[in-house]
Every structure is written in C-alpha cells, then in structure tokens.
Image (cartoon, rainbow, N blue to C red; front, side, top):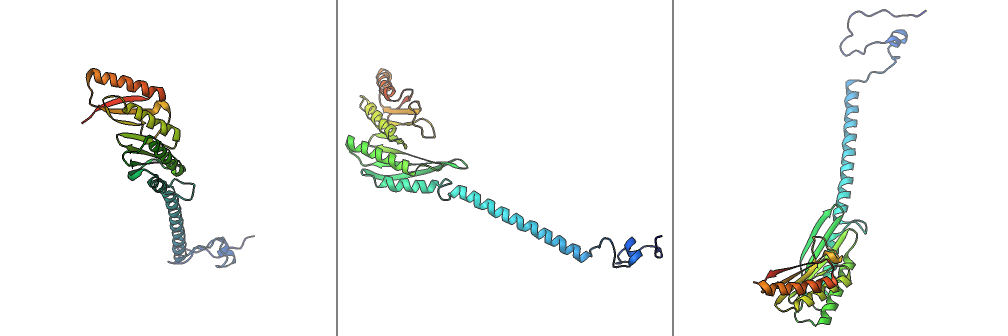
Length: 246
C-alpha cells in the first residue's frame, strides 16, 4: 500500500520548487531530480561558452602557426623561398666575373611550391673559357640553393648573349654554346637561349633561341635556316625565333 501525502491545490508559489513523488512520500529533500536554480544555470552556461571560446582560440593559433610555417619555412621541411634567394645571391655574387645580381623575383605556384630567379650581369670581355666557368659556377649556386619546394634559376648577361641558368650544369653550358654559335652567324647582333615556359626546364625540346638581327627578306631567311640547324643539333625540338634590332 502506498502512502500519499495530501495533494496540493493550485499552482506552486512563485520561486517554489515543484514537488514530485519522492517529495510527497519522503520529504522535500528527496526529489528524484534536483532542479538547478537560475543562478546555477547561468554559471553553467557561462562556463560552457568560455570553454568553446578557449577551444576556438587554440584552434586559430594552431592554424596560424601552420600557415605561417608553410609561408616562411620551418627548418628543412617547408619551402623557404627568401632563404633560397639569399643563398643564391650570396654565392652568385662571389663568382669570378660577376659584376651584379639584381631583379630578384619570387613566384608562388602553390601552397608549398615556389620559383625564385635573378638576373646576373657578367663583366664585359670575358674569354670563352671564363664564360664557361662562370655559367657552371652559377649553375652550382642554383643547385645549392634549390630544393624543399623552391626552384632556383637565373639569366646571365654575357655581352650580347643572354643565357638561362638552371641547376643542370651541362644543359646550362649547352645553352651558352648554342648562343655563341648562333651569335657567330653573319647579321646576328644578339642571342637569348633559355627555356620557353615560365617554369625552368632542361629538356631539349623545352629550350628556345631568340636571335636579334637587322636582316630582312632573303637575308633573314638564310640566317634563320642556319640558326635552326645549329640549334636543333644540340636541342632537338627547340623553338627558334627572331626579332628586329632597334
């Protein structure tokens, strides 16, 4: 048999906790579920809100560190384009025959891939052997600075020649030789030999030769015929073009 206390008529008084079965059976301190007060609910809500805010701040800081690390580089893991450019500038500037390293550029291809380049001015009047030594040394400097998501290249100005420099010393030397050969053609006053794309490439068919000449008509056709033949002998599939001297 269940004992029941007297039923209450009407709504509970303002601020009073509503009774349940345990209240009525065993007294007001034995309710099955304690009902939190308004103050307790406010405090709990504040704690939860502050916890979410703290977690959000921590996540934001972690993401900021990760993104910053990718952009500026950490150790030997992430790309460090500026450090690579600094190393190349320092090494190239110390090469015998180099008079200036300028027009440095950094290009970001993706989150973890960069291209850096510079223009190198050689002292005028270098001998053929000195020019070969210079481009080989510049290629070695590029190879030393290259890596970890950073591609290093340069163009070197040797009197009337402009030669692309990559980390492949042999291909760099071949560019110099082709530029010299084409420059020796009668009517040619300048030659550029490098790659035909934005990204430096060493494949033979990715190379390009642009000659500068005042020749027109049949004279230009004869010059281009020889230039094509000399270029294709070293770089099969390379592009050969001309522009008029000013």
